Length: 397
Figure (cartoon, rainbow, N blue to C red):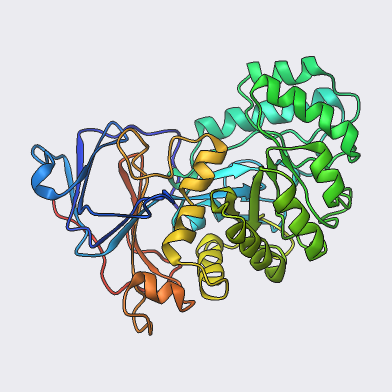
């Protein structure tokens, strides 16, 4: 298990050459006509053909050997607690395992699995600020965890959200996991949070754990949170007619998760595609959960939604990267100058029936990961969790 005491800084220039397929993370142009990436100080400074990029004086040079490169995957829905430990499954090293699944950024939907989680307002704020500070200073395996997502409780007032925002909290935990479950109550608090610059996510569907509640489409629409959390349920989904109502009735983020109802997830994807609103679709795992920890959960969602959901694999990679980054206001998820140099090197898994990476994913196979870079720093080589890739990159200088 790799540990990082805090955010490390890239030293010198990183150059990546011989990229066979460059996935941009942007729906408007999912595949880039480029074979080279240059990064400095943790950010991409050039993308293009090798002859058009300044690749001299590199401190680190990676030969991609013709494999594909994607932006680092973003898990839009996790439930961390402290460090790289989850009491939900009594497991250490789960975040580092997600790194080996290509995940470079995680977004907390609430630190709800903490034993004895405080429900009083002082405790709610204290836990959120502590989690935000802890994950700002500690990156398991290098993965960036946006922690500190308070679950709102009855009695909170506007000044509480101002105080949280001033302390650095940027997220609300799932609305509905605390005592606030009615749409009209949630709407007021969501508006206070939005005014303070805090983004909100609402639980959707049946109860996931004791203390959570049933949140139907009418409540979701009335609360008007920024993200429709696990629209396919976590785990029990709403009726498909209500999922259609949510897709058609607002312009908020449509989050599809691994630990949800597969039919509901495929249906939500189809509705978004029919509405011409694929930019709203984002992917998460909703883990750790009762069903466990899924290090390859985002890759599995991409393969499922592509193979069974009749959607190009390159589009689903956008849903797992650029879409989430744009909806979440993150500085990653896209291969373009100025963005964080978070990169996943992938290829068709050995012996896959697919002709190349995208074809293999479209046929339902997981790709093999050969390397992951976060903020311009190589964090892992060949993944210990994915099937072995046909081709893998190499640090050559």
